[in-house]
Amino acid sequence: LLVDKGNHRHFMAKEIDEQPETISHTLSHYVDMASETAALREGLPFDFASLPRLTISACGTAYYAGCVAKYWFERYARLPVDIDVASEFRYREPPLMPNGLSLFISQSGETADTLAALRYCASQDQHIASLINTLESTIARESDVVFPILCGPEIGVASTKAFTAQLTALAGLAVAAGRARGVLTPEAERQLVHALVGLPSAVSEALRAETQIMEIARHLSRAKDVLYLGRGQMFPIAMEGALKLKEISYIHAEGYPAGELKHGPIALIDEDMPVIVVAPSDELVDKTLSNMQEVAARGGRIILITDEVGANAAGKDVAEIIRIPQVSSFVAPIVATIPVQLLAYHTAVAMGTDVDQPRNLAKSVTVE
Ligand code: G6P
Image (cartoon, helix red, strand yellow):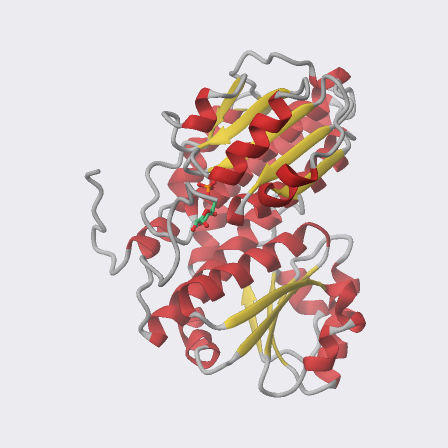
C-alpha cells in the first residue's frame, strides 16, 4: 500500500489532520449539498419507514460510532436501536424481530467477532447492512447493502479519520431514515443537513487548538489514571477519548457517563487524577457542568472540552478549557472528537511510545 506520512511525524498525526477533507468526501456521498437533503445512493433491500428495529454490532472505535448513532436514529428517526459489542452480541444469540435491520460497522471489514455477529443475524432473517471502509472485505461481501465510509486507507492502529467518517455517514443515514419515517419535516431535514455541510470547516477550526493541547498533554503524560466524562451523545465520545489514550499512551483511562459519577468514580477523584469533561452546549450541558462542579469540589483537575456558550457557563473551577466551535448539537460529537484525538496523540508523543504501532495491538483483529 503506497501511502506516506507527508510532512507528519506519524500516520496518526496525518490522519487526524486530514479529517476536514475526509469528512467532506464522506459527506458528498451521504448528502446532496445543493438541496441540503440526505442522499441515499445505495438501493435498499428494506424500507426505513416500516423497520421495527435497528440492531448495531461492532468492535472498538467502530462500536463507539454506533453508540452515537443510537442517539441519532432514536431522536431523528424514532427508530428503536439496540447496540452491543460484537463479541458479546454473537454469544448472546439475542432474539431478533423478523425483517429487522442489522448494521455492522467496521473499518477493515475483517474483524472476526463482527463477522460472526453478521452471520448470526443473517441466519435470523435480518436485513444485513454494513458500514465499511475496505470495500473488498469479507463483511462487505456478506452484506445485502454496503454503505461506504470513504476515508481512504487508515494506517495508524488507533482509528481516527475512520471514526469521524463513520459518524458522518451514520448521521446522513439517520437523517434519511428520519425523512423516510415521516419524523423530519423538509425544514428539519434541511437544518440537520446544513449542520453536516458545515462540518469540514468546524473540524478545521477545532484542529487549531493543537498548540494548547500539546501543553495540556505534557501534564497528562504524568498521570496514572484519567477519567473522561460525557452525557448523552457525548458519553460515547468520552469512551472513545479514553480508548484512544490507553491504546497509544498506555495510561489507564475510563470513559464514564457523567450522571454515574456519584455511583462510583467520584471516590477516585483527587489532585492526581485529571478529569476530562466533554460538554459542548446542548440541552444536557448544565447537568454535565454540575457533575463537573462535584469533581472540582473534591480537588479534581478539570480539562473541559466545550464551545463558547459552555465556556461561559462553566465558572472558575476549570483548569483548562479546550474550545471547539459553536455548532448544532447534532454534529457536536464529531467536532468534539478532534480534541480527544489530539490529547491522546500528544500525550503519547510526550511519553515517547510507538504511536502508529502501539504494543500488543493490531489494526485488524481477524481471529477471535
Ligand atoms: C482493532 C483496532 C481498532 C478498531 C477495532 C475494530 O481493535 O485497533 O482501531 O476500532 O479493531 O476494527 P474494525 O476494522 O472492525 O473497525
